[in-house]
Length: 519
Image (cartoon, rainbow, N blue to C red; front, side):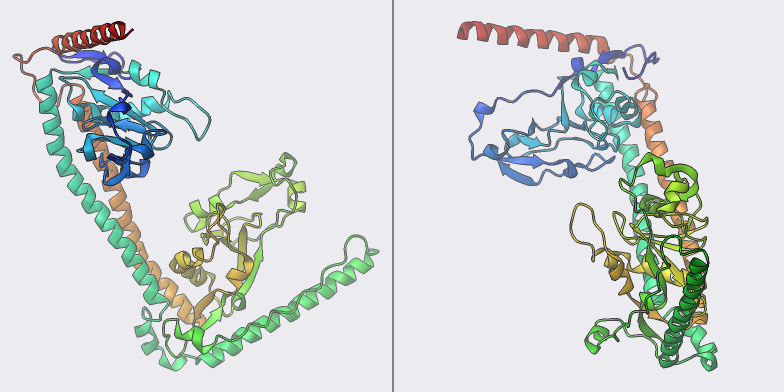
C-alpha cells in the first residue's frame, strides 16, 4: 500500500486507486470494423521519465484486436513490467486516430472517473515514490516481474477536490516545464561533449593534435620506412627471445625426466601483408612520418583461457586468484582494480594469470571495451590480452585508439544474439602508427583535453541528478497539499468520492437490468 499514515489537508481524502480510476477497462470490440485504422503504441513509443508518447503508428483494428491492450484519449498508460516500470514509462494518452488506440500488453490502463484529472493521476503514479513501492510489490520470475493489477487497485492516492487537482496540475506543468528546459540544456551539452571527445580522438589519430609538436621536433622525426624497420626488428627480437626461453624450458623438462607435456615451440611471427593502394585510399591521410600498421605488429595479442566445462563449475572458484569477466572490463574506469569472483588452484590450472598492466579487450557481449589490469588476474577467452612492445608501442595509445574506433570494431561483429568478434579481427585491425615519442605526446594531449571533458560531464550528471531531485520534491509537495494553497470554498474531496461511488453503482444497476432484460 502506497503512502501510509500521510497527513493531508482537511478537504482531501485518501482513496484506493480503483475508486478514482477504472483499472484496465474493457473495450466493446463489436463497435469496430476490421479495416478501421487505429493508433498503435508499442513500449518504445513511451519515453522514460518525461511522459512523452508517440501515437503516430497506425494499424487496422483487425491487426490489433487480439493480443494488445486497448485505450482511449486521457487514459494513463502505466508500464507494468521490469525495467520499464522502474524507468518511468508512463504517459497520458493524447488524441488518437479514430479515438481508439492499442498498445503493448505490458501496459496497465488507468481511466480516470469523472472529477479526476488524468494528469493528476499521471503525476502520482509516475513519481519515484510510487514506483519504488510498486517495484517492491512486483510478482513473477526474475527479469519478467510485473506490477499486479490487484496491487494497483489497492494503492491509496491522496485526493484533493477537483478544482484543486486542476490548480496542482497547472502549477506542476508550469514548474516542470521550466525544469525540463534546464534538463534539455544539460542533455544537449552532454551530446556536444560526446561529439567533442570523438573529434579530439579523430584529430589525434590523424596526426593533427601533435602538429605543433612535430614542428618543434622536426630534427628528431623518423620517416615511416625507419619506423617499419623498427617494428620488424622488434618482432624478430621477441621471437628469438621466445626460442631461447623455449630451449631453456625443454632442457629443464628433459632434466626432470620428461615429466608432463613437452613445452610447445613458439610459432614464427605471422607475415603481415602490406596494405594495398586500394586499402590505403579508404583511410585518412597521415603525416609523412606516420604509417598504417596492423595491431598484431605492435605487441602480443592472446585470448584469455578458461578450458574447463562448464565454465561456471563451482570447483574452479573460491581461491585467491582474481577472475575478470567482460562486464568488469566495461564497468572499469580505465583500470581494473576489483573483482567479483576468484579462481582457486584448480581454476588457475585451466586458465592463465595475466600480469598487472595488461590491456584487456573484450571480444564477446561487450565488443571492444578496454581497461588495464591494475592487479594480476585471470580472464576467459571472451577477453583478449594485449602486451605492448615497450620500445616501439605505448599501450595507452592503443587503448585510446580503441575508444576512438569502438563503433567501427563493433560493426565487425555478426548480427547474432551474442555479438562477438575473434582474435583475427583484432590482429588485422589497422592503426595509425607514429614514433614512440609522439605516441606519448598524443596520450598527454588527449589526457589534458579529456580531463576537462570529464569534469564537465560530471558537472552535467550532477546537474541532472539535482534536477531530478527537484522534480521529485515538487511531486512530493503536490501530493501532500503543499504546492498550492487550499480554498475552503472548494467542494471537499469526500463529496467527490461519494458522487463517483454513486455513479458507479448507478451504472452497475443499469448494466444488470440490461442483462436481465436480454435474458
